[in-house]
Length: 114
Length: 110
Image 1 (cartoon, each protein chain N blue to C red):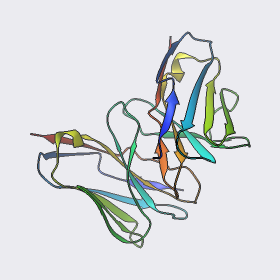
Image 2 (image 1 turned 30 degrees about the horizontal axis):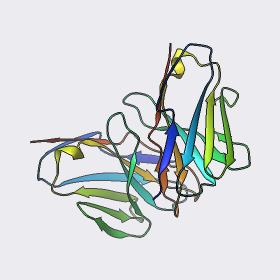
Image 3 (image 1 turned 90 degrees about the horizontal axis):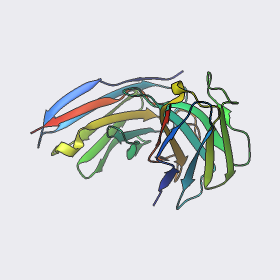
């Protein structure tokens, strides 16, 4: 149980395009999901907290107009990187709060912006 | 604020036992998590301690002392596949995100 999926696992895009990443909790409902970003050899950095049916809460320094988050249902949150640039290339990972306080992570999405 | 302190790197040999220590400071406390992260992959859940004491789960055990702000992850009978980063993540306020430090990179050699 407590499986979280992400799609796509890899994406390569041209600079200026938008990319949507989906995060799904497959066998449980998640009122709250979290989006992280990780650069090579760096720690996971929290980008935003996504709550079902309400606006996401962004961490300081994360542009909400650039990283659009939609948590439309109890099993799906999406992160859209708008007008992506090479510096947005990173490993994006979502997590969903499952049983108790445990957070389960998706497998991550590697974004490469050319 | 939140502060997490773990050794950056550790090395060990197959079959050995290794203890990864973590000290933390948080505003509020609702438990402490340990995750394993292999290179290029997302973290996977290992353990959750909310009360003081030792939780054993197969080859992995985790210990918590809330009064000391201290936890450790104990790995027994090390295998090569245990080479990974180990992330200590205290949970401050309930329902909030986990904040991670840089973790401890463990290298297991034969």
